[in-house]
Amino acid sequence: MAQRNNQAIGILLAAGEGSRFGGEKLLHPLSDGIAIGAHAARNMLEAGLDVVAVVKPGDFPAYEMFEQEGCLVTFCPNAARGMGASLAHGVAFARNADGWVVGLADMPRIRPATIRLVHQGLLDGAAIVAPSYRGRRGHPVGFGKQFFDPLTRLSSDTGARAILEQHRNEIRIL
Image (cartoon, rainbow, N blue to C red; front, side, top):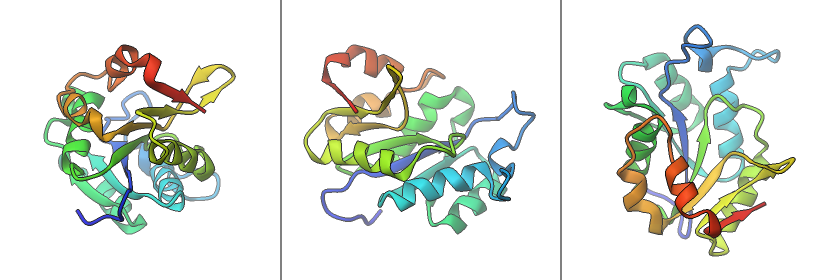
């Protein structure tokens, strides 16, 4: 994957089932007619990141939507194992990045300015960067290159929660 120098890659996790929503959540249009997943992708792209969207095997509608938005898209063969497996796949796919800004495709209202701040925190040397709102850590979360190995070993549905807990003193909260 070609990328700009000194650049983190956006990893957009989009491989969930959306079962609580009734399926195909990311394709559901918001009041402006634009799909939830497309909004999330546009926000990461507007923040200046190259974006890898991770989708479940065979999800061609989501694949095509993210590709049309300008993302590089990859099918995660182990998506059924949960968010951790999808994250591991995305990070491995973008292995040459200087870091990763991990966003969720079902969060269409994360502002590009917030995403830029997380990315800038990584560029400034933080190991892990996350925004907070009303005292709660939020999304997206940025991880420096030093977390490649632990991120690519994830496999459960808890995502990177264990890594964040283990390295909580290294998190720069915005």
